[in-house]
Length: 340
Image (spheres, rainbow, N blue to C red):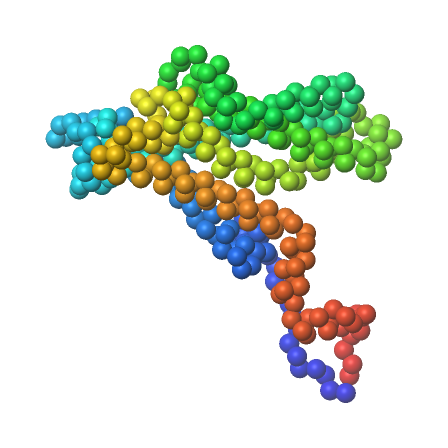
């Protein structure tokens, strides 16, 4: 028989970019999932660029009231000097909006780092050791989790701030307020995973060979109990933005002279809306919505991709009739060889 002239399929070796988690997730996503993930990544990238390069992108400082030609003036309409006008306090709206992204990013990073490390540690200790310590921590976590999120953050902000002023005291007060809300979530997820993982055979094998309890906890169990945390971190980041804005709107956030904050600017613009002054309320409100939307879309996209049922459905949708016939053969061509 004649040798088949059909071209052989060669496996393409993944490049450096293909190994990145974001690129890998984009390649796996299809249809609406890919659209959601791309839209979320674009919005999150804009948010990060504004936050990181705020000193160079903002035309003025967040607390600047004067320019080369004198004071800015209060509630000035959009113009060439102030593209989005000025606030009732005489601040440039565009500058305050850009600097607000940096404040939100700092608060989110600090809050997530604190809550992730504390929640993981407590969940790991509680789930692995068990006993009375586990019961006490579960009761405390459930009690905190039962409180309304915003009310708990307000109480924590009042208790932590203590009348301190400045950027970092305000950032820490807001971040710790958000941390108190998030710790029970990470604690419960990690604890349930640790209880499942510690019953696996490899943990028993580690005990048999004489591995110490800290080594088993932090090397063997921890590695397998935190796989779902990136999804929770992404979804909690959007909640942190909303909580920070709510604290600022209610007057429990960062002082306006210490940093620009979207919630505080939105609160000060309430009176302007009734007077027909729209440019002081729309920019911070839109910034809050887009930042939350971007992070939420990323979290939802990653959550969909992590669902095994959706992955199986996606593979079935991509499968062509020829692939289905090839998959049904008991022996593939690579094992049969070519027939002369």
